[in-house]
Image 1 (cartoon, rainbow, N blue to C red):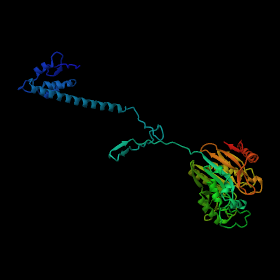
Image 2 (image 1 turned 30 degrees about the horizontal axis):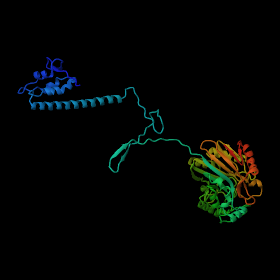
Image 3 (image 1 turned 90 degrees about the vertical axis):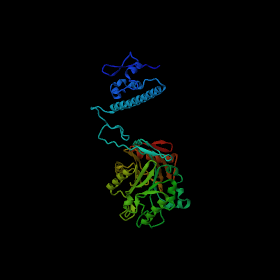
Image 4 (image 1 turned 30 degrees about the vertical axis):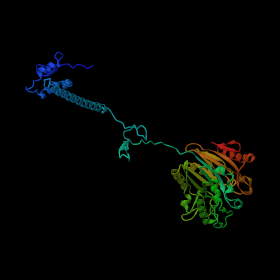
Length: 481
């Protein structure tokens, strides 16, 4: 139902106003000049209309038309009405747009007492200090190849999360050589047969390590005046690779037994087998450099040094040889440098007293110093017998792993183990001890069980308990955590 508009009346001062008694038709008859009379002054008319009555613009325009009710006048009147409605509609739209903008501008402005703080950064969370700069990436524009059109999307939100490297698994054995009776075994059965029974305990680790206590070569000649000189069969390199050995230490008192030529040849053969080495090099700088291994747990740096130093063995500026523990300041600086480059640092020492099951004070002091410098694991060898395990500042020290592939003449020197350890980025290590015995007379390792396992694990548990570490037994395997 339509609502009837109130009529317009003319006041004494000549202005139009809204009335309630006269009809629109009467007003039109009285106020609008007839055909032939002087036209109504439109400017005066518009200036006389108050703002609230602009809604009656169509009525006024209609009244301005001629009053003869011919068909033509009615068509003209309809055109006036339509024109008036269009003008009214446009005026209403413009007014709505104007007032909307004013209201939004008022809501968006801040009061004089208000303060603005930067939005939280996606990288650092909530920011409370206004002095921290906020960097905004530009939006990304994407162009569709088919249509050539472009669309703009907001910049990607970046987030920074601090993640620690995952745990690292390491398997380690002691001294290995491929000469004497071991060499004879290799000649008969091949290099791979040497590790066949212990391979399952080595290859699953992300880093598998042994101390290679001799060059692997067919070059060179024995160093004059040295009581024991070893040179491994060249097939031993293939055996190490077969067992899953990733890195070996050459920092020991037998690496140069056959001179520089055999040592340099060893580098070539290890590289061909895909095995890294530490603790020896073509010069002193190379010998002191860590071997770097990329693993699922991150980068692992392996440093190797010997405290057992025959004459002529240390590497020099232009001399192939081994890295030594003589300069502890340089040693500790090397560990610190390695810790800055790698996620984990393993330090290998050829140290201690032969056939002595208790680690001495020098071993303990040096092991703790390198851990303080950034080492995550210390692996020791040389005594030819096992020594205890210790945890210092959540880092494991294995003072002596014993022999691993080595012919021997006492049962105690044939009793050894495979160390399997899991290193945590922040927390204590955990691991297992698999007892092995090196067969008589060949010196080939194999796991043992029952009473043979008890002898090895009981001795290791006793030595370790004296260092504050308790091993747990489960069948023929010991563990710690």
